[in-house]
Image 1: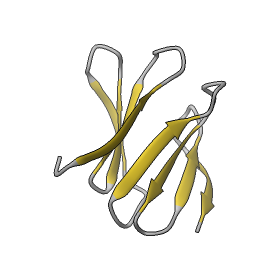
Image 2: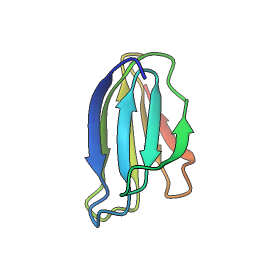
Image 3: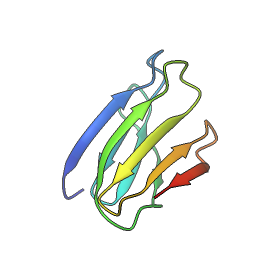
Length: 79
């Protein structure tokens, strides 16, 4: 990991999402890495969960925002 720019917990504490370099990292509450998402073409600046915990979003220097499903699929991409 080059650098961490943002992180957020699921509203119920089920997982932690981290913006690290060009990747979005998904951890379980005990710190085990569950998944690495690479959909952005530049540094990811921020991640945030929806209040209901059903989706989260990531935003990057590449001027895109991706809304992710609980299955970690990029549902919507805005640029």
